[in-house]
Length: 140
Image 1 (cartoon, rainbow, N blue to C red):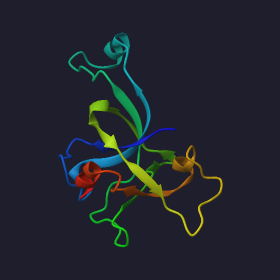
Image 2 (image 1 turned 60 degrees about the horizontal axis):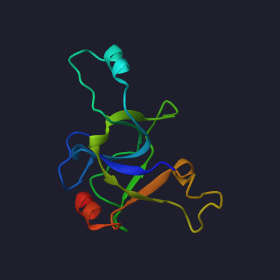
Image 3 (image 1 turned 90 degrees about the vertical axis):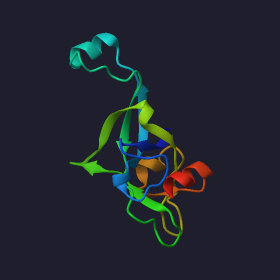
Image 4 (image 1 turned 45 degrees about the horizontal axis):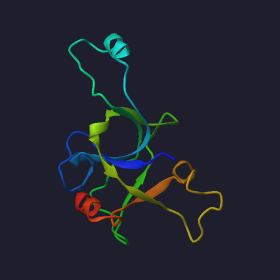
């Protein structure tokens, strides 16, 4: 499985998400890696020193200004561009914490969903702010 995390996109403070402009987004972490020094020298200008650890992530939509009114959770979905998941390579230092996503479904969850495929199969999720007090303070 690949975990989901709350990512500081460069403008996020320590607490408070009231919209994407505050600098936090949810992403699914696909791989954490480091660039071999020889490769870093060939693909980057000499003035740029890359972070030691990087992560390849696939993005979910940004936070709307207000959570859903019935349960106070933010609704997110995958960002798809030209039929592909929108992805980035980010410094691991931008990963703030894990975040629990609840799949959105009707009266009955699809039987083929399980812990290993639900992030790929479900189109819409809710960010669960009640897993611990720190994520609650960050989201609200």
